[in-house]
Image 1: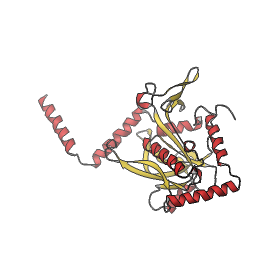
Image 2: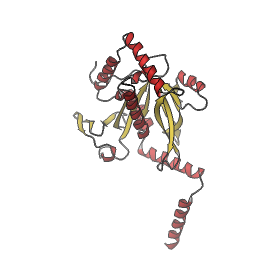
Image 3: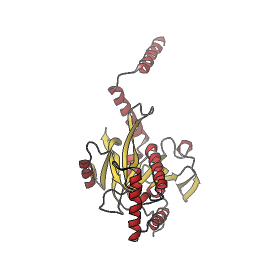
Image 4: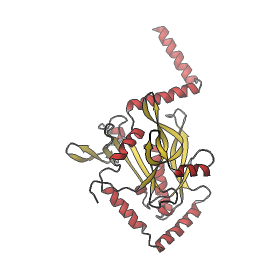
Length: 305
């Protein structure tokens, strides 16, 4: 293998819960409340839809908020890789990637391994520069049993939930994670930081209509069939682990430009998008008691001055 080149799972498509929209002459990321499956090809209108996107929507009434999937590997951390990442917005290339303990940072003399304080305590990344960045590979459909769809996210909620589910399912299945029939699910919740508006994150569960007990039985049966024909899951996991460790950074230069545009926009653009959302929220809802008191206090203060 070429040293310095990460050998990652073959990708045949993307899974997203957002898109890039143009507002006031700027291309900004915009969250959505449903899944979209695309190819890896873009045109002037954005990513081209994958044929599975239409077939899944026809099978699901309403918005596409669940996708039947399997994972490639028994080891949870091979299916979901998450790091704190800082990108150079001009070149689109990663500058610093860490796990909260150690980081790999690009310097003039090469790659340096340094302590990683996480984004909250990192002076190098600056406010809003370094973010959690996760990549989940899943199999969708039966067309390509080794080809995966990649879901990328900078959401703490998605990364934390997916990591927990993968480790839990691995434990309860007796390390048969790759044999489980699973389902990606889109969930929503509201927080004080979201001003009570719903925010969406990705979860992983047993497929609709089945139970954990039934899924575990099916996983044991699938594992037995695979072993009977010589399928070496342990060997596949070992090959993936070696491939990931072969490179300094996972994403290729061709991918990072799109990643930066979608997940690491300029800070000014972030503030603009937040301002637009806050303005839209204030227009959609009447002022509450707190807002009325704040306005009254401001008027009294202006009169006193």
